[in-house]
Amino acid sequence: MDRLKILLYTAILAAIATVISVIEGMFPPIFAFAPGAKLGLANLVTVVCLFSLPKRNTVLLLITRLLVSTLLLGGASTFLYSFAGTTLSYLAMLLVKQLGPKRVSVIGISSIGGFFHNVGQLAVASLIAQTWSVMLYLPVLSILGIMAGILNGIAGNFLLTRIKQLKKMNLIFHANSSWLK
Picture 1 (cartoon, rainbow, N blue to C red):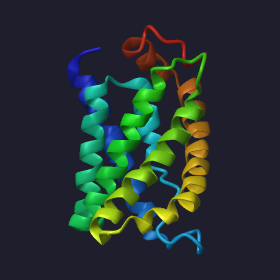
Picture 2 (picture 1 turned 60 degrees about the vertical axis):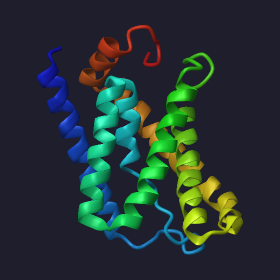
Picture 3 (picture 1 turned 180 degrees about the vertical axis):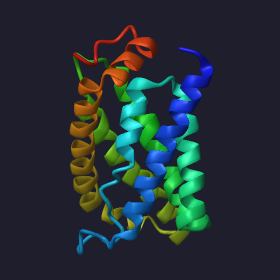
């Protein structure tokens, strides 16, 4: 597959993720007991990219989504929280993915991403507030992040196993793995 097609595919997925982020940002928080907690539906696109694109294109997608979403929805603090959560989440998913399909599933990888996304955001909140007591919020957000990760993982697994083009991309860029059966 040539580089232009891969770049176009990356751009389309970045646009989809950005639109999902913007739409999700328009709704009020769904959990009254956890202000600011969202399902993180745009992370579904990240999960799909993790298994269908090279790493550099996934990073490009994440940076594009972060920048455009921040320009549309928020300011510098929004960017800091999103950047920390996205970066830690992506790195954790990459690390866990190295365990291989015999030890962890797409759903497990996504749930790790949901957990670490919250850890990253709370770390930034702790630095801004200059107190680690913000981390007391972590148990509540951990449960919600893992649940959201499971939902995104189920949806991502469904898409990756049912859409022929995604299967084809997985075989091209991740030929040594057997994630999709």
